Amino acid sequence: AEANVGVVGLAAMGASLSRNLARHGYKVAVYNRTYARTENFMKNYASEGEFFPSKTVREFVDSLEKPRVAIIMVKAGQPTDDVIEELAAVMDKGDIIVDAGNAYFKDTMRREKAMAARGIHFVGCGVSGGEEGALLGPSMMPGGSDESWERLKPMFEAIAAKASDGTPCVAHIGPNGAGHFVKMVHNGIEYADMQLIAESYDLMRRGLKMTPAEIGDVFEQWNKTDLDSYLVEITAEVLHKVDDKTGMPLVDVIVDHAGMKGTGTWTVQTALSLEVPVTGIAEAVFARGLSGQTELREKAQADPFDGPDPKFDVDDEQRDDFIEHIRKALYASKIVAYAQGFNEIAAAGKHYGWDIDMAEVARIWRAGCIIRAKFLDRISEAFESGTADISLLFAPYFKSGIQEDEPSWRAVVEQAVRHGIPCPVFSSSLAYFDGLRSKRLPASLIQGQRDLFGAHTYQRVDEPGVFHTLWTEPGKPEIKEK
Ligand code: NDP
Image (tube, rainbow, N blue to C red; front, side):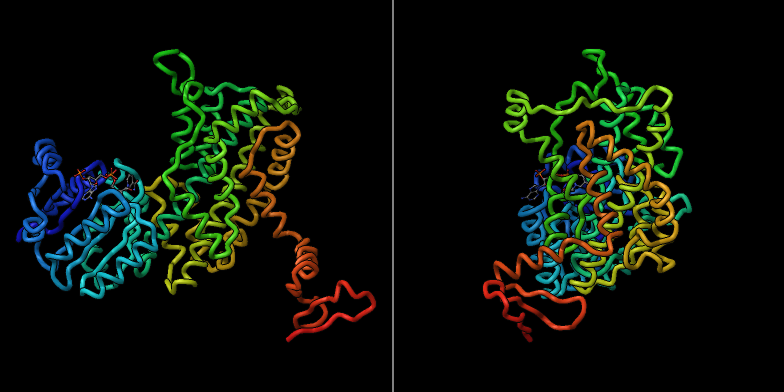
């Protein structure tokens, strides 16, 4: 037993994580189902640190110092269950299994329970940042027992990304599924963020007739504002890229079907069951869905609907001002999407009894992960100050920001609607904001309809209790139910 930690699964993510650990002075046991991958790993990276390759799970477990730490980085789903079972069969009480793959949080809860019953700590750890993040420092969201966190903390703090103030982007999120839950919502927010950027691009491209390179320049400028973020930065790079084969902007030769692996869908499904409106994330997932509806989209081209010309009523002198409106609309919508995501985390925290520190979540997303952005500092401060408890939108910094941007936001959505350029996340975020502003919502009418067709009852504004109107018997008084 010589290795400090072990990694199971040496595909892109596991290999990078193993190298990251070794580069920080940890002795790393490595195991992969297919030994050829292990051999290949050793051939390429053995010189980077101290690795202990194993051919079997038993050999791998035996090479670990106690209490053992085994990090699983294999395909999510059944393969993860298989590997957990193989490890648990030869591990001892007090050992720690970390699943660093993209597990569904309910699977993590199930696995944690099963392992706890066998005396093994199971940690579900969200890892963001892709292959490069895993190698150079990811954002890490572990969930599990306090005891396991104590053992993992120094190691995870060493390998995690460091924010600009030097703090590691890892924190103990909570018990069992809390870490994977937060990672899931991170991905949901990422969907919304990417869609908002894509909508901004589309508005400039079609509404303002700008070229991809010109729009790339705009994103480059935006990256020096409140929007400073990894996604805005890479957007500029993508838009500036010219296709080698055709000499065209690369974005014009890429098929416009957005792929997805499911974490966005999970975020929305979970939000629905927790009854948290995450309209920005949901519209972003649906927008990807629509992009992939080939048959529907082909039919709509072959049998077209009439509509307005997608050119905005903006002349050349007004163009820069309108670009600034789009920037503000993007910022306001982005705040809404984040606020909704954090509301989902808070609701899950309540529902599952996790004590999640929102300020900490914002803090560990500041570096390493895909949604890393300057304004996460502000989000973290907002939660710390207690002004964002109900919603991020009420924290003074964001409230005044959104208030200032509101006219631009509305102007952009108005032009987009008038000229037929879809901007589902811009417009649904604005609708959410206006919903919050409304003293009375038409939900009263819905309650009336529900009471009429289904005797679902309603509450009154002037009297406590539950009421039902005798709709079919005019003249009869409404009756009160207990
Ligand atoms: P893959 O998801 O492609 O999985 C390949 C690895 O899983 C190989 O090591 C493979 O072993 C192993 N594996 C598959 N089935 C089994 C099984 N039944 N038993 C044992 N091992 C099995 O690898 P990635 O590196 O891309 O991703 C690893 C994890 O990280 C996944 O959960 C993924 O969702 C997540 N991920 C996270 C990212 C992030 O940004 N956080 C990015 C990419 C992935 P073999 O060589 O024998 O086939």
